[in-house]
Length: 122
Length: 122
Length: 122
Length: 122
Image (cartoon, each protein chain N blue to C red):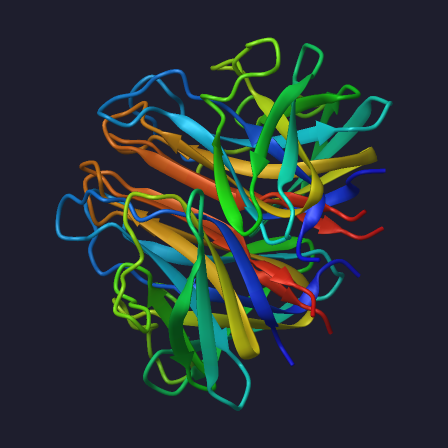
């Protein structure tokens, strides 16, 4: 099957400031090419505190999901904290493909970056 | 032979707004180092609807093709929809190498991002 | 274990100019998913001089560290030089995952880029 | 030895316009961790014409070289053409690691992108 079940993104950061009509955010973009729904668990790692690991999302078969990290909440209702460096582990019950992107609108003109996440061989 | 026949890009998005003389767009950039023409099939996956899979392009031997996703139409004349998250599967009859880039000119200064697509081992 | 002990980043550069309230910088972003602290050695390679290899950092177990390259000093107190192209080798005593990002604020609007570093198979 | 001898970059483009004091350009950034000088051959592929393959560069042992694609000339004195999509093959007589970056200053604020090149297994 196409993809991997575990992916890593070391550089996460939710820029606290936004200008214009687009809010600064990040997205974990998932594609599920299997015939089953993907149940996705996101774990966030920090520099000086324990990980937060109760974030869950889904992606249907033959669907993509661009998971907005500024909107997702964990099972206790917590948001991902802004203005703090973090890293992300993405785990799925079926193989998926994962890309990570950031939009920063803290200055007058926006900035973007993206990279494929790092796939862990199972 | 150099390259792979299937490549995946989870983060696709055609920014609907543009300022200045450059239009916001994405490109799937292909290099064909074989001796045959590459026939390329693009499938677009969405969050809440079925995939669109009738997009075709070509790339000659020892040629590159930067396929503009804001211009390509499928066999029924449909454009890739703007302002909706999508993911892309790129399939070719011969091995190719694939990179994906976005130009966003929705604010006064443009933004760019790029990544190598994710290669599927055949 | 998840990750690799050696990672390479060919395109390093500390932009000398900054505008606004964010300083131009780069970061080597590390995630340590092992149960031990990672001791990290950074070596900087240049175009016309010998490498600088006395930069050390740490990352705790289940922690991330976004190592700011404009702030780190080597064991003799030297900073990474600004305005000179360099490349980076990242070595760790335990497997880690490494991503590299740049923030450039030399013009009115910032620019960002990122990529996963190149993992060396051990 | 660390690295590969052949690397591919499908998305090349020299933006013809520049504003401010930084000129729009691309760089092929090389790191040579061997004990020998690397002799590097760059081939540029186009959409509608034959490749240009007479571009050569060097990178010393334990040195990096950020090869400016707006400055390099081939053995007949030709520059890489601006304002035309191209792709790049980078070949070296010893293993190297290759990253590709673009600076675009066509609007008031610059934009950057980067990616590791695609390594060909030998």
